[in-house]
Structure formats: structure tokens, C-alpha cells
Length: 358
Image (cartoon, rainbow, N blue to C red):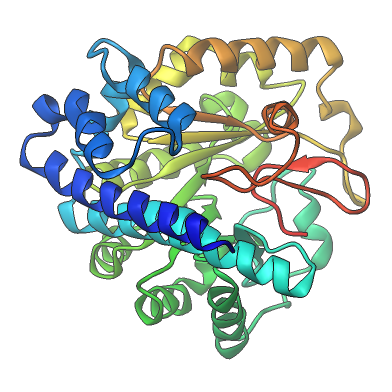
């Protein structure tokens, strides 16, 4: 990496750290003034388009982005500080500099985030789940997961995403890993049924673990695929997380059966009311021997969801991601590493990945 690029990364990291401290004093008053402070640290012309985009988003107190930032300041202060440090400074600034340097030295792609499956075991049996094809006996042992994290950190990767199986079957090991690597942020897809008060206290202790809870609509739609009573268990889990001021998000797999539920304004409002900070949408893909092709949404249904996500993204104080369709954003950026974030192409098909593991 060029010396000037390193200087820009360091200047922006310092500005962000100072800005976050400034916000802590009085978020409601200081959010609109944040970019004035950043401008004092970062010379004219550096990250200009990114700074303008952030400035426009936060200066309007009626905007959903301003309201979302205020919601972040309702979280536990220690957890919030760890998230900002690990996600923004380590993963997106410090990490991206080291990633680029490693990529240039080794002529390879370096992922911004690494996805891994701690276990194939799961306490549910959801209709059409491809993960069930692997059985319930496959596990990455503790030392192997630690080795993956250590290798990633050397390349500049500070963001780790657990899939499964149900990762929280291994929740004691996952908390040990959070404790061992406090400079990394760990996000876990989970069905949410194993989240209890004891686990919330562990999350408060380690500070760097964020669950993304599977929720596929309201009770009838959700339990029709995930099992009777699961909706109520997820509601209890979200209630515990909210009361403990812990960050979490929602992971939604939409199908031909639930697409109307998950794209409704009522569903978005429910997620926000329960305390979710983000929602990640995936459309169902029939994979494996027990796949249910009938659940695959039609092109018309996918178009409906696509349009509604984008409408609510501009009006609701929750960060919405559309896994299959947000790649178009990356294409408009010419599928290259920008000054702040990493976008990469799949070597097999050329598809753009927002959070790649290549």
C-alpha cells in the first residue's frame, strides 16, 4: 500500500475515533455536527464522496438514518464502543489497509469477512433447509476456529460470521473465542431459541458478539416452516436482548409462502419495535435432497420484495440488506476496492459479493 494511502487510512481512523467520543457526550445534539469534526481532521478531497453521503444522511433529524444512529445510542455503552472499534476502525479502516497490502504481496483476494460453520448440529428441523443435508455430527474444534481467526487477523480480517447448523449449540466455545479476540467482531446467524438470560450476560461480558436471528414473518408463516412454537421463542429471545441493551438483527429467508409477510410495513415495524438494528433478506434456494421447489419465489414475487425493501430502506430506522440483489450496488462501483469498503468478484461465476468468502 502506498504511503499516502496509509496516511489517509490513519487520518480517517483518528477522525472516526475522535468523532465517536464526541457523539458519546450528547448524541442527539452532536450527530448533525459530526462531519464538521471529521472535516477538521481529514484534508479536503480525501474521501469526499463518502463524507458527503454521510453528511447528507445525518443532518436531517427526521431521516431514518439519524433515527437509526439514535437507536444505537440506546445500547449498552461498552458493547457499543466495542462494536464501533471492531467494525468501523479495525475491520473497515485498519483491516482494509492490511488486506490491500496482503493482496498486493500475494496476488490474491483477501476477504473483508470470513464465514465459517462451527457445527452442523441444530436443534430444529426447518422445511427445506439445505444445512440438514450435512447431518448433526460435523464440528470445527475450538483450536481450529482459533487458527482461522488468527490467520485472518494477520491478513487484516477482523469480521467473522458464523453459519450452521445452529452455531449456538456451541455457544460456550463461541464466547471463549470472543474473549480471546476482543479486537474482532463476531456475527452469528441463529434460530434464536437458545438465547436466554445467562447467554445475554455472557454477551455483555465479551461485548463483541452480535446475533442475526432467523425470523420468517409472523407466527403462522414462521412456524409453518420452522416448527410450532418457534415464533414465541424468538419473541422471548428478542425481548431479552432488548432489555439487556444488546445489538441484534434479523435474518429472513423469503419464499413463495411468506414473501408478503416479510415485505410488509407491519413486519418492518415489528422488527424495529422488538429492537432489531438490521435485517438481512435471502430468497429461498432449493438445495439438497429435502429441498422444496414450490417454496422458490416467482420472479414477480422477488420483484415485489425487491421494491419494498428499497422503499423501507429509505424510510425505516433499520439497516436493510438484500443479499441477492444488493450486488448491483457493487457493480455500479465497478467491482473494485473503494476507499472505505471491499467488494470482490467470485472467481467461478463473476458474481459480486458484498461480504465475500472467496
